[in-house]
Length: 157
Image (cartoon, rainbow, N blue to C red; front, side):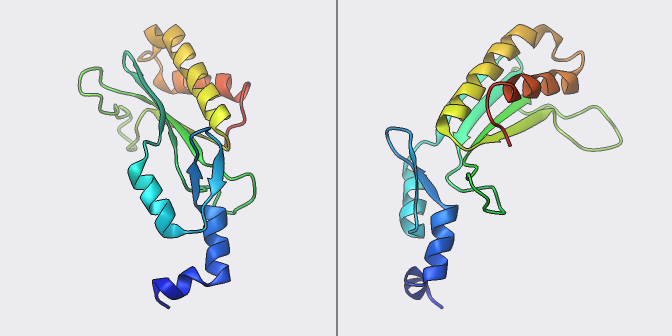
């Protein structure tokens, strides 16, 4: 089946409609059953909601454009905030010092709405400012505390 045939296939269109989304100027999300339209939108628009550096902590929130709730249970999960401990000069994510496994000091939280993503970002930035002096004492505890603070205020997945 070629792309032209796929565009007229109802199953394919239904899959696209529950998988691909665009963010309108008023920050509402609409499904996009046309894969090429979605791909063009993703290429031409800035998907960053906010991106902040607080010392050695980076908080970045983005619109994913794609439902990452792969079971396709609704609501779709379309936004993501990554919080990472970074080198203050290079901004590279700091690796864990545990020699038994490879990891980074970071957390990822996901949301269904722009409002939740924006609110979570603000909470994380505020809490990171508060806790920054303790970040390297116990990085995992620092990140877990951020998750706890956000989950009390917004729906995270």
